[in-house]
Image 1 (cartoon, rainbow, N blue to C red):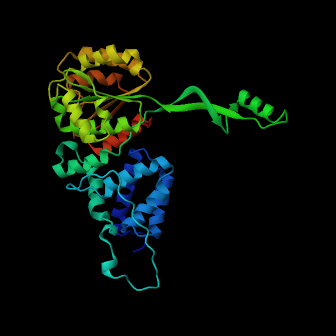
Image 2: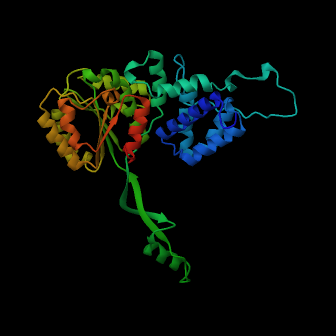
Length: 376
């Protein structure tokens, strides 16, 4: 029947679009136009062949040399993740295959196992995994999730600085224009222009490691580890009964080594939660000095508060005056019937610019977009 797509093609398209979303979460600017080119190229090639998908994505979704490393990591995590597979730093790119259409079908021995694309099986399961609640994952799914989290990146909303750099458009740069004029011996020269440079805002992550957040803490801290390696302007603190700065511990390139160092540095795992006191300590020691000033501050917590909610409300107002944007990611927000009735969450919400979910990989991808300035 015309106009009705085959179910397998619909599933493959959904998986490939999910792959593009994972690339965007890793910092690859795979916009709608690039995704359309990716899908169109696989309309000519075979989406069931590994090398076809690899090269089609690499040639259409990557826009710079920096994207290639991220593409390798996301491709390996998205299509090759296995519970029993050790994560390799880079997967060797598939080799190009020469095809002679007039020749008969190739013998079965010539078909390499690695060239078979597990699109409907592994990739579709990965796309399902993106929406699963982190608290209900099996050990195998957690291992696959760790591979995907390792490719994350987190950049703050872009701001314009006082510095200027050469540009094709913008205001006239009198100094460079005069120097060019003198270099030409006074002959008329074209006007050289410059514009104000842009840089991402600092991102500060406050991760709740109390007992009520035990099911989510490991994944959120691995998310924070990837964020610190995506940009040098990311700071990470754990909050519970104590405030601990863990940016140095997360500096290890290996995620497992970073988590081991973090476990040794944080004394209040699975303890209580005193959000108001911890936030006051952060603002007194770090935030007032400039770490929170003009930054994007993200609290990853369920909002349970053992202390005085009025103290939390006052410190949140104080934080809101310092920061450029305050974002609260609550893993329990996605549960059916959820309402922010807990005393701590209700006290904090008036000073929150964006209240988002934080229960799944897809929710963390949306959180990364909100941190970059997208509308929640």
